Length: 172
Image (cartoon, rainbow, N blue to C red; front, side, top):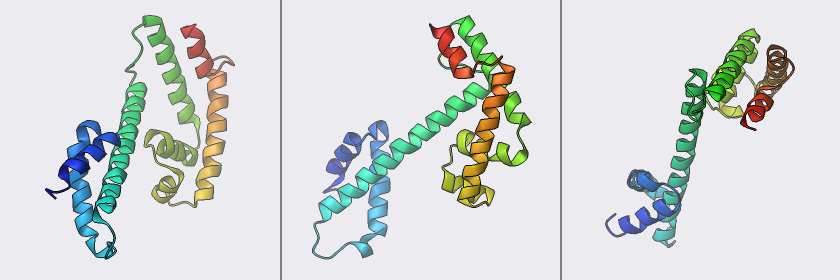
């Protein structure tokens, strides 16, 4: 560990782990130790270890993005705007949020569940299928139908103009 720690830390930082680099390296060393039985005899150890570090750094970056996106969505749903300092923009944001929540409530339960899993819990199709206990194709078809219905519901509530258009129009 002492021999490769500094190099592993640099690899983690360069791979995007930033302030989490030390944690990434620690997790990578534990995973490498647990996987020593799969290490090929005679193969160079350093590249194998650094590959684990880079993969862990990527995982940490992805997890951070997912966490940030989930926080942003939660703030949006709670009516807290993280980017709107302008009162008019905040009003458009609040109206859009209310319309989305109302349209979401109008969906059948199965469609609402799939939308929540995909966009509010940030699960991919496979994960959503596992959580919901449905085949992946069912998740895809119900999500497609749900998004089509949501779009229609939002168009009706907002007078034929979709949310993205209204917010883009306000920014002009």
